Length: 290
Image (cartoon, rainbow, N blue to C red):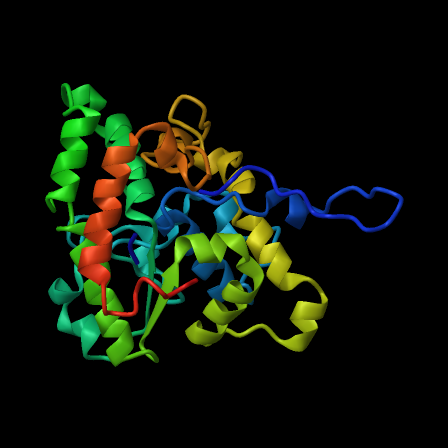
């Protein structure tokens, strides 16, 4: 997996009497970070809904990143953690470029779900992430300098646009192996896309589950407000059981898309849009998710 949306949703009511919005309507369109955190919570809840119910789901006690480990981090550096010993866990994540994926992922029929978003919001999210993570290590580059570096392809896992394009091409070649999602599309109308995600994973919702609101329960549990306010996702000073690197300030900042408008001037936005148009033109990617 790799690389937040407009506040609360107002649901039109055509009856004369106003009704209280449901929990699903309250939480709709507020989801964590750049997509990785949200996608982890969704895939975990989908795949493990037969092992745990909504009251015993480990997401209530652990951060999504503690439940779905990175193959480039936890596997080589922390091989003895509990999640890697759990034979029932079949979910793993990565931010690696497609060309660097190991054969054990690419050539074994392993299914992949890739999520991307507007690169302007991706940059702002990364900017805040590293501000929180590295502020104790000394001063960071300014916003404009960091944006220039991002536009020039300097990013942790390589040029972002190249990263997206490589997975898009891999998806076109193997659509049954790689599900390609756009964050903004997913947040705009999560229910059909979550059902599509479950079907792709091999854990499709039954008609009875849909009738009983199981899809809505999964989306609600994985919403920004729910996850941010759980004890597991609070900062070190707030968490009672043990300190966690996955603080709410880092992984649950705002839950909104379009936040780049609060930081980037029009010329900066136009520059990124131009780079994206040039890179993706003729690939079908710009039309995907519209």
